[in-house]
Length: 332
Image (cartoon, rainbow, N blue to C red; front, side, top):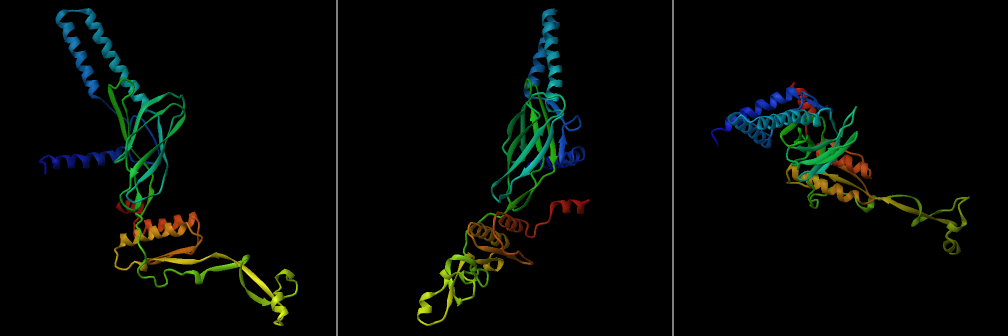
C-alpha cells in the first residue's frame, strides 16, 4: 500500500463530509454561487504563462505595443471567468425517472435541465454519475433532457449518487464544475438465472387447476335441459336414444394457476434462489396463466399482467433489503 494512501483517504472523507454540508441532497437543484466551483484549466495556466512572458519581455525592452498586447490578453482572461461561470449559473437540475433494471446491467437515469428568465445558450455541458459514461449536452431553450446509464451491481435500491456537471466554455481556459446530489432512486431486480424447480411440492399447480368460464370453445359436459335454453344446444342424439332431454354446455379455458415458491429451490443460497425466481416470473408472465409468489413471511395474490409482474419483481428486489431513507433517518 502506498504511504500516501492514509492521507488520500483522510482527505477524501473530509471532502465528502464538507461537500455533504455545502451541497445536500435536493429534489430540484439550482446551480448558484454556493454550488459552482471554478479553476483555471491546463490551457488556462499555459495562457497565464504566455501573458507573464509577454509582460517580462515588454518590461525588459520597454515596448508599449507588447505591454498593450499583454494587457489585452489579461483582460480576455478576466472576461472568460465571467462567461465560464455564467454558463452553469441558474441551471435547474432534476432527475425525472430511474428505469428499473436487473443486477449486472445499467440503469437509465433521465435528467432534466431547465433555465428560467432570460434564456441563453448553455454549451459544452458534461454530465456524469460515478461509473457512468459522461454525456455532453447543450441547453439552447427553456429545457432539455439527457439520459445517463449508471451501473447496477446488486439488487435493491439504486442510489446513483452525486452528479458531476462541468464545462470548459467558452475558451477552455477554466474548468467550471459542481457535484450535486439529486434525490432519486431506482429498483434493481435480481439477475435472472435459468434453473428448473427441484422441489415442486405445491409450488406449481398445473392443468388440473385451470379455471373455466362460460364460453363456446371447449365442450364441458351434458346437463338436464332447462326451459328457455337454446334448442341448438339440445343433445338430440341422446334424446333419440331415449336418454332424456339433455343440453350441451361449453366453456373457455381462462387460465391455469401456479405458485412460484421459495421452497422450490432447496440447497441454494438467498441470492441464487431470488435469481431463479426472477427468471421464473419473467417466463410465466408471457403466458396467460395466473401466478403468485411465495417468499418467507409473505405471499402475493395470484394475478397476471405487466403490473402484477412488476410488483413481484419489486418484491424479489427488496427481499430483506432495508430502505436507505430509513437508514439515513436512523443515523440522524
